[in-house]
Each structure stands twice: as C-alpha cells, then as structure tokens.
Image 1 (cartoon, rainbow, N blue to C red):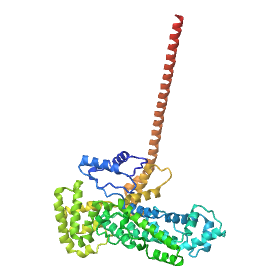
Image 2: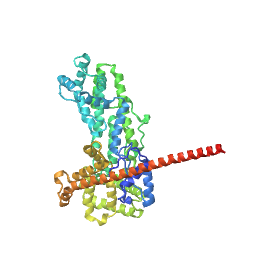
Image 3: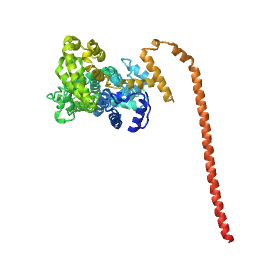
Length: 520
C-alpha cells in the first residue's frame, strides 16, 4: 500500500504505518527496513519495537539500510573527496550537446568516431561504467572541439557545461582520473548488478562484501600488506581512517592503464612529477573514503547478516564447523527477539547437523558447484521435501532468513512504476488504482497472459455505470457540503448579527442610564 507523507515526524510515520497494516496481523511482522541510508526512522523503529514487544512479546528484525544504496553512496563520497568532479564533467558532456543541433553539427565535423557522450545520471548506479567509457573514447574529439571554439572556428554559448569541459581539457591528468573512476566503478558494478534482485540473497551478502573490500585493499595496495581481512568481523573492526595503517603513496597502484599513463607523462616532462604525486594522493583518498563510508553503515555490521551465511551451500561444504557456530549465533539473536523459542534451538541445531551429514555428504557436488543465481529457497526445498519430518524445525528458520530483504527491490520498482503511470495532478487513489493494474499485469508476465473471466467481463460492462454512480455520489456530496456550508454561513451571520444587537442594546442601556441621571 502506498502512503504519501510530506514533512512527518516519527509519530506521524508510525500512525500512517498502522493505518496501512490495520488488516494484517502485527504479530507476524518479521522485518522493518528502510531503503536509503539517509532515511531516519530510528524513533519510528524504536516505538514500533516497543509496541510489538508490549502487545505480542516479540520484536521485528533489522539489517539496516539497503546495501546497494550504501555502496553507491560510498563510491560518490570517495569520488567527491578527490575534487576531480568526474560526475560534473560526465554530466556536462551530456548537456553540452543535448538539444543543440549547431553544437552537434560542429562536433561531428571534426569527430573521428562520430559519437556523442551517453546520458549520465549520478544517482543511477549502473550508468557510471558505460558513461565514463564513452568519455574516454571521445575525449580527443572533445579537446579538438574546445580548441576550435577558443580559436573562434566554432561559435557557441559558453555556458556552465562548456566551462566545465574546458577546464577538464586543460587537466593533463584527466585521462588518468577517468581510468581510475572507470576501474573502481567496474569493480563494484558486479555487486550492484547481482544484488538488484528480489531473490533471497542475504546468506551471500557478508562474504561478497568481504571479497569486495579485500579486492579494493589488495589490488590498489593503499594499506600495508600485513593487514589481512580473514573474516567479516575483522573487517567490521578495521579502522580505514588510521593513517598509520596506510602504505606510502609511491607503493600505491591506480591500475595498469592509469599507472602507465602517469609514467608516460612523467617521461615527457619532469614537472609532471608533482602532479602525479597529487593524483596518487587523491586516489588514496578515493579508496579510503569509499571503504570508510561503506563500512560505516553496511548491513555486514549486523550479526544477523554475518551469521546468515550458514545457509550458503558453498560454505556448508567448505566450512561446516564454522556454519554450525554461525547457526548458534543466529539462533541466539532470533531467540532474543522471541521469533524462535529457546526450547526449539537444540532441535534446530540437531536437524542442521543431520542435514550436513545425510544430505550434504550424499550430494556434495550439488552444494560445491552451487550457482548464486539459483534461488536458495527452491534449492533447499528440493532436499528438505525428501524428509519433511526430519527437518520440520530447521526449515522454518531457513524460510525466515530467506524472507529477509537485503534491499527494497519491490519498493524501488514501485517508484519506477509510479513514474511511468504519473500524470500531472493525479490523485493518490489513482496512483494506487493504477499500481494495482500494473502489479496484476506483472504477475501474469504480460498483458496477453491475463485470463478473461466472466467476472471480469461483468465488471467491465458495469464500469461505466459505476463511474456515473460515483459522479452522482460526488455531486450529492458536493450539494450536501454546499448546504452544510450555507448553514454554517447563516449561523455565522446570525451570530455576528446577535453580537451587533447585543452591542446596540448595551449602548442604549448606557445612554438611558446617563439620561436618567441628568434628569434627576
């Protein structure tokens, strides 16, 4: 259900939330989460938890904000800390030639690739890579275009976009910065792509974040090599801002292409040495800020997220003992929230170990070669269904973990749907109605797959009649409102008239008293 709230405090959000879920059983609430990391629902969540604990003796689970938003924002924090303004340059490249036939014609005259820059929006996660790749390809043409404008060969309005591009063309290290931006964007892109899914992926999240951070640290050599992230808990405790843990700038690698460009520039002119040092220092800031902001709000800081990896099929085969330990920690958290009974925990652990011995050992290749793009619920259900009684306690725990959302995919898709169906001045009821239609079509795959039932036909046939009845009801309501308003207006008029009469009577009484005193 959609609720549109403007400026709202925690109590307002809680009230709207209760209105939305009034037909649902609050005792069944499993998870309350927020999408963007800048959304502040702390007081709302605390108040809701207190209500749930008081009324139903249990609490909802939380794994923090959407991990994808946090990673993307960390990338933005890292890039902005350098002062390179890559995002501004990419945006300016797009807007400089957008809706300007004259500029486009001039650019095509000297262009060798005959291509323009791609549209770039810095809040769209997956647009960073193709946009900067195209910028690198056409940069020599962009430099030529700016030179011709400055010589007076081409005439153009020197707006903000042009001035941004002109400043960038004067930077000898701009291609180095582009390649650094591209390399880091390519590094995080697979993670962003994989986790943009409604599938149950939480058991993979902790290890994937660990691998991503280890790759950033080891490949770029920003930190001293003796600091090894062997586990997620060590990663969470690591202080990425501690200058004593940093490598010297000379040992830092910006990637093969960027390092090679820097070497060629320094060979041409020794004066570029200072610029090369500054670029490397700024690159270090990029990586440090990225990692710091990533770990500051990342869901991996929650024990629930880290320990859910006990349901990763690959980890079950490679680290069974660690998985049992993680399950115990997981059950401790669930029992504290009263989602799992303490008395059931021993039985759950026993069934989990039984599953490892009987099922995993019987089908080791299926677990070892498991592909993360396979849905976990479908994969485990295939084995659990073979002996339902033997796993009647561990399977509900698995379903709880598989139900937890690592991101708000359906909500974000909903915002996209709202944009598609949006019309100026549309009422809230119309948004909800159109969303219901869109969701129904999506559930069937496409519009031609929807079965046309007799009930639907009757509803469509009577739609016009219902619409007319609705208009009549609105008309009557308006008339009644008008009558009510007339009554209110008349009441206010009589009230004012009465006040005037009372004032006149009071004035006449005073006049009478004064005249009486004078005659006496």
